[in-house]
Image (cartoon, rainbow, N blue to C red; front, side):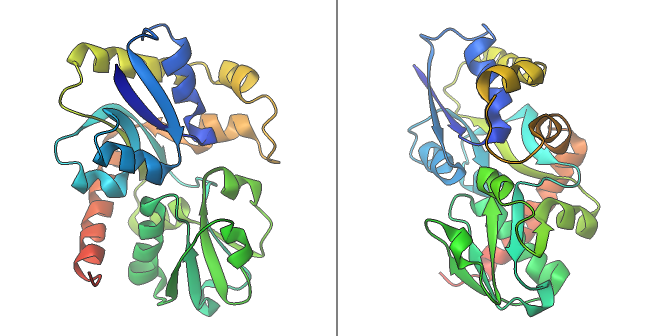
Length: 255
């Protein structure tokens, strides 16, 4: 049995649909688990899963894994689900609480603070409901469905993918599918076909999988236009640029 670890966010719904409903994969071939991004990364690092969609910040640690080349979770401009929420503008922020569910988004915020915004906040490790930490001069990085649920609720909100695009001129790749070397090539080929099947059936995904999504948000627009699932050359260039900046952060972060 091949163990697959997938993120349990709205933006992976087309992928989950394809894996389970496309018919390219037999149910007796795999086990699918759904977790937050950090947990997905941990599953791959522990070898508890052989295929997973992981925050790209973990890629340097997955030395024996290969990146699947056809799909990703990315954004060409705005993403709406990776946000810095604040009660005050950037230049007045003194502390930033970091969402514990994804190291990619928090490192993206660190890069933007150092290289683009020119601010040096105190970084706080978030836990539980980090929305409650957004008070006064303390902002927070909020990702995934929680970001969508609170979109528009704060006087200042900064879309990290948009900020990255303005800074670099490049799209941003938040997560990639990776596979361990022992996964058969035939399975990977059919797996990628299943992912594409899900992306080709967005309307059915919305109708059958998420018909009562609670957020006051345009789900079809988000899945069809806001999220960009094609892992093209520009996204690969954006990923390479991010990993270069990430290397600088790691190098200058005390052990």
